[in-house]
Amino acid sequence: MSELKRYERPIITKQYSGFMNKFGSSPITTPKTEIDGIPVNQITEKFGSPVFVMSERKIRENQRNAYRIFKTRYPKVQFAWSYKTNYLEAVCSVFHSENSWAEVVSEFEYDKARKLGMKGEHIIFNGPDKSRDALIKAIKNKSKIHIDHFDELYMIIEITDQLQLKADVAIRVNMDVGVYPKWDRFGFNYENGEAWQAIKRIMANKNLKLIGLHTHIGTYMMSADAYRIAATNLALMTKSIRDEYKHLLEYIDMGGGFPSHNTLIGQYLPAEQVVPTLEQFADAISTGLFALSLPAEELPMLILETGRALVDNAGYLITTVLANKRLSAGKRALIIDAGVNILFTSFWYKHKVSPAQESGLYQEDAAIYGPLCMNIDVVRESITLPSLKLGEKLVIEYVGAYDMTQWMQFITLRPNVVMIMEDKSIEIIRKAETMEYIAEREVLPAKFAKNK
Amino acid sequence: MSKYMIPANLAVSDTGFLFMPATGETFTLNEIGRKIFKLLQTGNSEDQVVKDICENYDIDAGTCRKDLDDFVGQLKNYSLLNEL
Image (cartoon, rainbow over all chains, first blue to last red; front, top):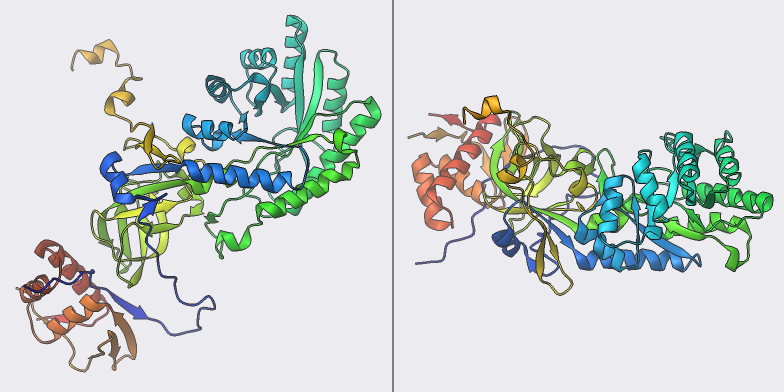
């Protein structure tokens, strides 16, 4: 008997005449059959589908690369891992083992960092919500408290006065750096003098030590020059503090906001062609800081709270095709087993999606829907993909940032998260949820319980 | 058992290029699409098409039938065939 030929679903595509696409024909989709040398099928056989996969190797590579880029441009550099971007303990631990401090924005994140063994002084406590108890804890641990508003400043003054404590503080400064939207809801404003008022208030208090200045000008920033403006402004403030109070700041914290190579919905060209490189951001920031004109030993440390740019490409989501459909207008649609509840970033990104197996060369436009019985569950409105059979796998790339913190338990349970270690072993770093795990937090009032 | 009529003047090249002279529209077909289209054009029923494909390709009859239904739906949508 002769060998059977490889089957591919029958496809017909209508051709439209018109202007040629200046970007050429659609790219041939290269299958992503393995992650860090481990076959995708092997991962799903063992850990199910959908499954998030983190790469230890990639995280380390990203962190080392970023450190090298900034360190070769500015003498004192310290990274602080942005917990909100991905606070799975294994992920934070990789960053901490690469000498990254912790940057937290809630008491929950603060406690997580402490649980992972971070020294108090290596935790930067940001955000507008710091309770009195959380502040006392952070002050006692000598953490770096970045004050967001005057009410917080007054609370710290009151706490330190009452408990006879000394606090290491910085202020968050917001400013106009020529980008929209202007993030003026966090911190004290630079242009209207509010930031300088806060500095004067801190400098006049014997219990508070102003150790730094912080800014965070936006997210997924497409302009490196905005960072140069921000760094220059903070450098000028640092200089004014030195001149007026003879006080040297320990650091300038430029926050985060560097984009990853995820393409935004509505962005025409792929991200890698339009977003500035880390080198360009580093050039802009170091140029701004050198406006200080201080001797090297007096230069403040540069702190970076980079999140997305260091972890997005270290995360993958493997998902399975549940169904092929044809929409009313003839467009193809795929239903996959991962929805927007676990892939929150699909609301703003056009993720890179690749088949996990060899496919035919013939490609067709398709929509990708998740498994939720909700109209909003759209993973991709439109993508060119080869024919896929039921049960075949897709790999969604650049999902390491925010998906594993902003995901929600909704309709389905959240899946396993595994990490491929540098030695190619695979370990679960967050177990798939179970009915018992969800039900454990619920309380059924007694009058309903009798019906059970 | 459904059978279909495909306009006789439709030309399909060996590479899967399909031209409809009446409207000037053009289409492309992948290998299986081309094969099925030719089987339907030569008067084969759906059952015969499924049998032929399953004898030559690595596919089960159920999946093949489902894909054929979808393909026939598209051909109808483009007015490339009529049910007899």
